[in-house]
Length: 370
Image (tube, rainbow, N blue to C red):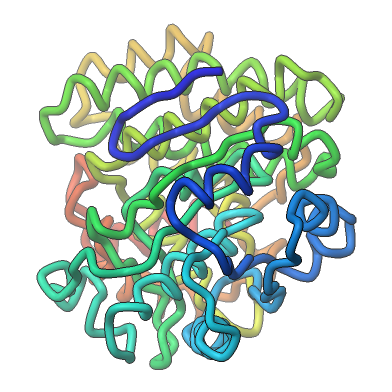
């Protein structure tokens, strides 16, 4: 068992889910709300977790693929009506982000837009909120150690709420929870983790610890993703992918870049409801090429780890693990690209890309990824 204090407390080990009731008690939580989604309920995993408790916790299973303010408000109403005093996010990044937003509302008034980064919301967020344990069941977003919740607000914009107070009280990371994840979800969430490592490392801020963590995540995740996709029961590959996801999010406190500036507004396109990690995968090769001229020797460092030119290697990896051939194959139209290119300029990840993009640059990246 490794107990790590970096941003927040992390309990990382196979089988560590058994400690969930004990850890909640340690935080003083007697009536937790478990925030999850119907897909995870259908696998039986949620029921398995509920079986660890003497008194059955309240469950909210209405998390959408891209969490919305409406769903957050519904979950918060359940939290209040059931007299809950803490929250567990159980699932992928969507469930964890929804849980973070519900937690925010335990000490702050709605609406959520006022707390988003693009509206200077961090100054309005304080720490008088309930305890939270984040339990990831995918190896992708790293939301369990992230200070952000990305939510589609009531206005229809997919925006980040960022604050150190948003960090879960404890991240409970059990690789065993990912053993049953299907190949496509393993691939899509895994590409999310790799994109975090790549974008963080390319970022312009001076942060050697974050760079070192990002590179370690890349070294673990790149060889492990193919193995985990091919054999979901490969315990070492699953362990390495969960650690890579964790490290990607530890590192991206430094800031992300153009990939995420584009995937956030793309994920807010309601009629498509696109998976975040899949979008990251499809956009990554074009953004790597776009950044190459300004990142200097970092390109060579990535090339050494990946065993080839980063843009070409990531494009081939996408093919090998079954990612879509491009944005058009995912239903993204030219009209959507025109709209998203403008919206990307206002995303909180825009300013931390190593090469500052214009609207025309963003449109070019979308078209190259089509």
